[in-house]
Length: 171
Image (cartoon, rainbow, N blue to C red; front, top):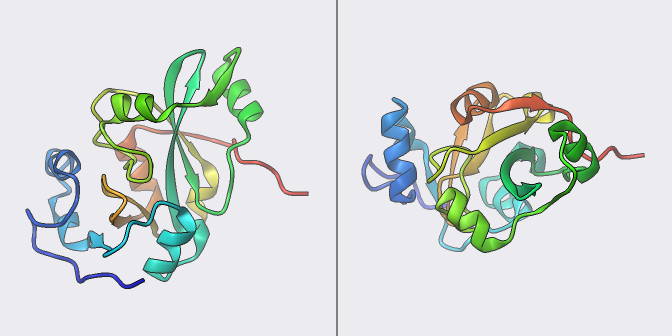
């Protein structure tokens, strides 16, 4: 899978809502860094292969339902969310993966293209600390065909995220 070169601002290939969010956040220069792929990269592994980065440098934006309230979790691409740890962190009775229609309704984006910020609604955001292990992470730019690079501290700050430890522990 190959990437096409970055394109000028206004024609980055990013979802229009996300492109607007970049402008509103004063991040318009990121348009030039957005990478568009000829094929969808719906999984973290596909995105990492297309970019040529480590799997853990992919920032997954995952939506969960905590007692029916949507919560966005930012997780490195090599890890999985420990739902029990997430439930404890949120103080919720029940946490499940959100259904695709809830993801779209909450964020304005389809699964596989959800960016860490620029959503339709204000949603609580938790970011797993493992993202900070990298100088740069890559996240979806609103479509399954586009990604952008950002240092993880800035990404978490722009997402309004709270740092937590919710990844599954390996034995």
